Image 1 (cartoon, rainbow, N blue to C red):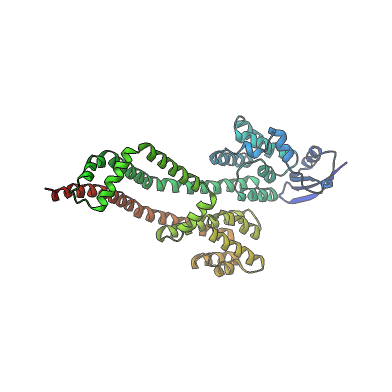
Image 2 (image 1 turned 180 degrees about the horizontal axis):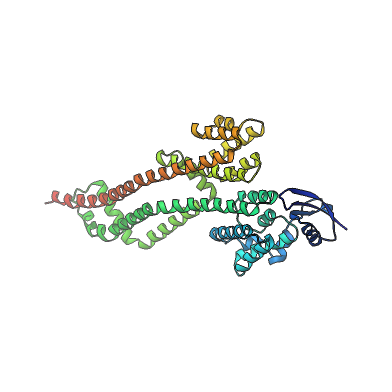
Length: 413
């Protein structure tokens, strides 16, 4: 009979691992469960490598699970993690909890992904691996928290922390969209008003262009000619506008372009400060959560690095992790690479000395989150009047150019 390597936790939370001889994985899992062990990893020793779940995913739907779950909204994924943590904290066995949630989404792509995870789990795969191979688009820190929860026997608490971090990320994206809604509406309204003026007002004065004695200013002539061209070439103008919008949409859909815009925005006066606080708040929050669930320091640094959107910040975090791996203190490495200000460095230094780094970095995250909200309010206070001013200058410039063209007729009289 084949041998199986297993890793499990006992009823009192201690970690246990060893080798078991059994006919198949299901029998081995049942044997270990009867001994009061909670298995989170079970691999056939004779395979020479971990059993992957590719065959399971193919057997489930005939195609990779990632294709089936590509359209799953992040809101559904977050709700799924919250449900799973609630059921586990209520004492429901992991397999039963996962199966019950899958049945609740039976006709949806999320249900297919959860069924794949359930099948992998019943075959002896750990939950962290089952979720990762199911095709669910989960952040990397979720897998790390699940792995830590399985090893410490506190899976429900780990999933709850993961859902809270996912909710914080979603809240940040939601607040950013809501904050930019009003300025975008102002800009769209201004462009629409400009288009209306060009189509319905400016062409009525276009006959001034044919008057050879009218001394029309150059700017007024450009405006009148643009309005006349727009009326005579509506189809061409519509095609050009649609092509321009499509081009902008395609360009912004590229990850590299968005990252470059984000990097450029960090150099701007007010918005740059907001971005810095946002980056540090997200990093510190994730780093704190990972440490609270006993993730090793180097692994926590590596995974929290993925929360940083800017390449410059990621480079700094990578250098810090390298220095810490070489034996340098975390606060010293951060000071060397100018990652935190004096207040943040003091919090990290105190956390290292007291052994409560998770708590001090949580305070650091809250501090930067507060500063980010203040910077956002300051940015909006400046953005709204600037937007109104630009729209007013645009419309006012068009109307002034028309009035200058009209007054130029006085030279004829």
